[in-house]
Every structure is written in C-alpha cells, then in structure tokens.
Length: 284
Ligand SMILES: [Fe+2]
Image (cartoon, rainbow, N blue to C red):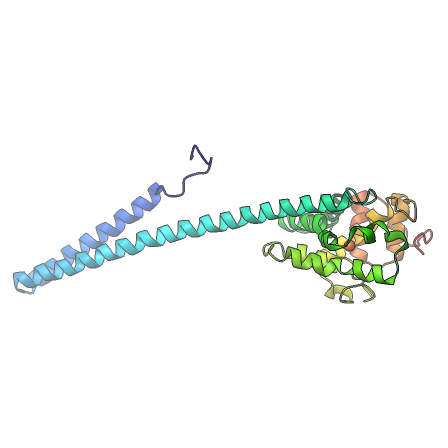
C-alpha cells in the first residue's frame, strides 16, 4: 500500500509476470543454442555462427522489451478505467448534492428524489433485474429531476397556479436533465430516466411522446416511482393520499399511462395487494 494515497501500488511486477519474462528469456537462449547447433552441424564458418547468434539474441531482447511494454500498457489501461469509474462516482455525488439543494427551494419537494431512487430500486428488484441494473436504476431515480436546476425559482414556487407558459418551462427539465447527465456514459439508464420519466404509455407524455415499450424501461420504472411518491406526499394544491389509494390509482392509469408490470412490481415492493378494479379516481 502507498502510505500517502492509501492505494495499492500498480507498478510492482507480480511473481506470475516475472515467471513469464523468465520463460521468454529462456526461449531466446534456447533459440540461440538451437541456431548454433544447426549452423555448426552444417559446417558453416564461425563468423556466420557468431552473427546468427547475435541476431537471435537481439530479436529475443526485442521480444522481451515488447512483452514488458505490453504489461505496462495493460497496467496503465486498468488504472485509467479505475480512475474513470472514480471520476464518475464523484460526478454522481456532486449531482446528488445539486438535486438536494434544488429540492431545498421547495419544502414539498424535499427528499422526493431520494425516495424515488429507493422506490425505483424496489421496482427493479421485483422485476428481476440484475444487481448492477438495480444499482443503476436507483441512481437514475435519484437523478431523474436534476434538470429542475435550470427552472427559475419563481416558477417552482408558483407551480400550483402556473399557466401554460410556466408549464412549458417546467417541461424542459427533462431534456436539460438528459444534457446534464450525458457524461455518465456508464449509466445510460440515468439519461433515459431523466428524459423519459414524464412519457406515458399511450404517447400523451413529454418531451417526445414516445409510445409503449419504445419508452426505455428505466423511464417507465421511474415514472411509476415518481408519480407514486408525488401522490403520497402533500403538494400545495392537494393533500397526500394513502399508499393503497396511490397504487390503485396507478393501476387505474395503466396500461394507458403506466407500464402495468412496473405498477405490479411497485405493489409487490410495498406489499400491497392490487385490486383488479380501481377503488376511485383521486387524481381526476
Ligand atoms: Fe420530473
């Protein structure tokens, strides 16, 4: 370990690699011996033997040099991917802090993205996604509204009685979020969710009006988590409804609005039985 950085040293050569280099060197010596034996048995002049041996040794040394360079390149490449992953982690961390500060502008929004991340994670688990996909969907949920950072405070504050102009401005948060998240090349689902979490299965959503399964799964998952969290928390223009009513409402609005599999997965995550018939329409 490096005492200053706490990182494992990358430049030490492991025993296996030394063994490999030793084998290459042995092979070069063997080649010299074989060439020498051949030329002597053929009765060639001593000078030719010496020159042939020198050529074989030089080629052997060059091969060793190439072998060593390949090892160094391979180690550098591993180090670079590790650094890229760390940089991406730091970027996500910075973005999460920005999300929290944006939410702090409105008491009704505080904690919303963190909850959406946990709900999206639960839905992804119940859909049977892999551990890595679940982890990335959680991040996608936490960052889905990052584009709100560009929406002026007076519009957020007046959201309840916002006119069509204000609503047009708010809608841009999906494309802005997509742009902000573009550097996250290894978490493409975060970009998909940021842009697509207001899309609806029948094509009436925004920003692109995509229909059905053309909406990326991450966006369909986050749409369900986002709407559920919004319904179960107070907003300036309405009070929160219960978990059961919210799930029934999501069920009522699928498959036209939401992906039914994602709604069922949310119900399973929350351990709520889903009735075939919605009890009532609370969001009408
Ligand atoms: Fe949103």
